[in-house]
Every structure is written in C-alpha cells, then in structure tokens.
Length: 504
Image (spheres, rainbow, N blue to C red):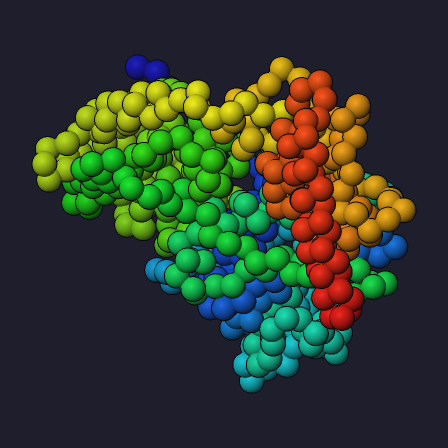
C-alpha cells in the first residue's frame, strides 16, 4: 500500500486578489470591429433604439472614439458594477451580455483610457474612468464629476440621451494612425468605417432588419464639425432570391431533451451581392451561422461536420443557440466565435427534416447546385478593357467577375483640372478617362474625395465609354458618340453643380 491520501487537508484560507496587470490580458482576441460589436451588445441589452459610433478628429489626427446610446442608462450603483472586472449583474434571458468582462475587455483591447458616462431616468449623471497600463497597486477606478458627465451626455448627439442614455468614450486609441496627414487619415477612416459597417451589418442583421435598432457611424472634426452620418444597413447572409427547388429545409435533432434546429440554405448561384460575398470572401463563409438572441456570433465553418470545400460555398446553415444544449456549444468572451463540443457532429448527423433529408443530403444538394451554377458562361458578353486606377476596388472586382477581360492596358478614371466646362476628356495614349474636377464636390454631395471616390459615376462612365479605348483609332461612329455624350453629360453635370451651390 502506498502513502497516497484521498482527502487534502487545509489549515484555513487566504485572499489572493488578482494582480492589476491581469488587465493587460483582457481583450487580446478583439479587433476594432468585434470590440465595438461588444459595446453595441450592451446598448441593445439596455433597450437602446439608437446607437452612434463616432470617431473624433483634431487637426486631421484621430484622437478618440465615442459609442453613444439612448438606453436605460446606469445609476451610481450600477455603473460601479459595470466597471468592476468580472462584475456580474442579473442577466435577463434576452440579454446578449453574459460574462461580465465585455465592456472592459473590448475597451482595453483598443484604448488606454475608458470613460463611462451615464444617466438613468430620475437620477443625476454619473461617470467613471479606467486608465489602462498605468502604474497602479490595485483596481482603482476614477470618479468623473457629475457636471462633466452631464455635459458629455448633453452634447448635440443625433438623438437625445435624456432622460436616459450612456456615453462610452475611448481616448489614446492604439490602432489609430500616428499621423496628422489628412490623406493618410482619410484613407484609414474610409477603410475602417467600411469594414466596421460591414461587420456590424452582418452581426446585427436580424435586429437591424426588425427595426429595433438604428446604428450609425460618423466622424466629428473638432475644428470643422460633424460629417455626414452613415447608417449601418443589415447584411443578411441568407438574403438570396429564388432558392433552389425544395430549399431551405429545417433539420432537427433532440439533444438531452432540447431540440437542435438547423436551417439549411442553398444560395441559387455564386453572386456579386454583398450578402453573398461577406467580409473575408464567400468561400470562407460557407458553413454554419450561430445566433444567440438574434445576434450573429459566428459566420462560417463546418465545426467538424465537413471540411471546407470550394464546391460547398453556396451552403449556409443557421443554428440558434438560445436554449440550453448541455455544454454542446461554447461561446468565447469576445462573442466572436462559437466552438462546438464533441457531441455536436453526432447530433447533426442524427438530424432529419420532415421528408427525411439528412445533413449529407444537404451537402450533396449544395454541391450539385454549385456545379450547375458554375456552368454559367459569360461567352456571349463582349470583352471589355480591364478597370484600373481611380475605380473603387469593389467595382473593379465586379467588372472582372462579370465581364471577360481584354488583354490590354487597364483604363484609369481620374479627376483633373480643365480649362473648360466639359465633363470629361479622353486620353487614349495614357489609357485614361479624365473627369473635370470642377464638378467633383457636387457629384460627391460635398463629401471628401479620394482616389477611388464617386464609384457610381465612375462605374457608369466605364461601362459607357471603355470601348472607345479599344482599337488602333477612333471611327466616325465613336467620335459622334463622344460628342453626344459630352453634350448631354456636361449639361447634367452643370445642373448638378447649380443645385449643389444653391443648397450650400
């Protein structure tokens, strides 16, 4: 017999508070998009109808970010719970929050200073601030004066935060460019806002489509005011038309007394729609889409059901994990991924539709649909000059995907200074269609421009005129068409300019 003992003796207990440097590990798996989505979750849980994400710019440099909502707000007591690391309020069954670290993890993943300012109905405004990375010997949170909290809440937001609402403020944001070059910052803002709207539009597409929430992104230049707001539009990954016959189908399986439901969809064909392409590309987005309380948590991947396959990129299946599936799923704290447990693949394999369809039948049908749709030929479409500089990359991709390309130099479309009122000039030697800079502000509606601006105007000009850049010389018919287009389009541009000046 050995000296092993079953019971471990103890002499008492000692309290071991976490080291303040534990904050350094928070949010390591967050991107800017997932961090802001986590804050939007809090706004939704607070019953907000409106949420604003605002970038703050001063002397061209990005210096901060706000997330503002008109939800229930927080009292002096509840704000301390919200700012406590691991603080667990009483979560309702419909809440998106779950772990008690979302606000802190999301914020500290992006910013060194987190300020929370809030007001609940019938209460004074309150504020707290965490500074991340400071030399501290404990978890001390700064108290923000009530008058400053009220002033921030009462700023001219596009909606009222009275009688209740919350402002989250990030300062010293790590991911912002350390530059005051307007062009560099402008490019960063354009790309970041585009990615952000795409991510939030996908993750909250059900909630946005139901009209429960309006989500807006804008930029405030401290020197010049607030720019034009951009609404986040829902991006439904199942937003196809004319589904293949018999689809979608719902497969179900009982898991420990709870019904697992899998809504199996097949896109009718490869599509250029944003709902099909999605951030990262359609091929990476095949597979399973996990939802909790109508919030998309996880978009794509097969979780052990099948290996990724180009021929399955039309297959997407939705699973709602609102119920208790006895540990079948695990959601990470960032709410950006769901991991299926060992029993998941077995449960899916046992799932059946009313007509007996299995998951294997579904995958075969999706592969067959891909095979048929992939036979669609563009042979009857006239080859075009490849698109080049000045045309939005997304527009270029659509042109390349939909139209055969000639083996020639690409066609560039750029703005230039003209000494007359013509809308355009043709430079066949440089393969460039020049647009008159005089009309730029009017055609952009006063927005700031960039190299790839005015995508609609440039796409229309490309489709109309790319053929005049083909061949060794212009024929009589081409010259007549150019004169006709110049007269009509220049007249339209002048009318647009007059209207713009009248409204300015």
